[in-house]
View (cartoon, rainbow, N blue to C red):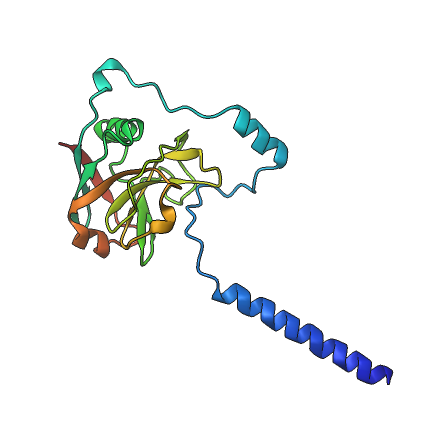
Length: 204
C-alpha cells in the first residue's frame, strides 16, 4: 500500500512540474530593455529612488529649440527620423548634443531582434551609458518608433541607448520614452545586424 501511495505522489509531482514548465514556455517574451546586469533593487533602494526623482540635464538657452529631424548613418545605409521636439524635448536635446559631439560615431547596434534594433551603447553590450529622466507621452509605439532604453525603474532611462521598433509595439506605450519615428529608411532598419555600426548622426 505504501508503494502505491509513493507511486501516486511521484506521478503527481511530475504532472505539476510539467504544467509549470508548459506555462513558462508559452508566455510571450518580455520586451524589457536590460541596461545593466545589476540585481533588482531592494525595498530600501526603491524608496530612495522614489524620494530622489532623477532630473534630466539642464538645457541652456541656446538649446531650447530642439531639432525636428535627424539622419542616422549606418554601415547598411541612412535612416531619417522625425524627432518629437515638443513631446520629448529634453530627450531630443540630449540626443542632439551627443550627435553633435560625435558621441555615436563608431558605436554599434548590439541588439537586433525580429521586432526591434537597439544601439548607442558606449560599451557595446547593453550595459553602458548614463541616466536621465524618462519622458512619457501619448505617442504610440508603431513601426519605426524611436525610443530610449531603460532598466526596471520606469522613471529612469538610459541617456545614450536608443531603439527602433520594426513592428507595432503597443505594450511599450506610456512605459518608455518615445522621441521620434522613422520617415525614411525602414528598409535599412530591417537589414541591420548585431555589430553594424553607426557612422554618425546629423541634425536637420
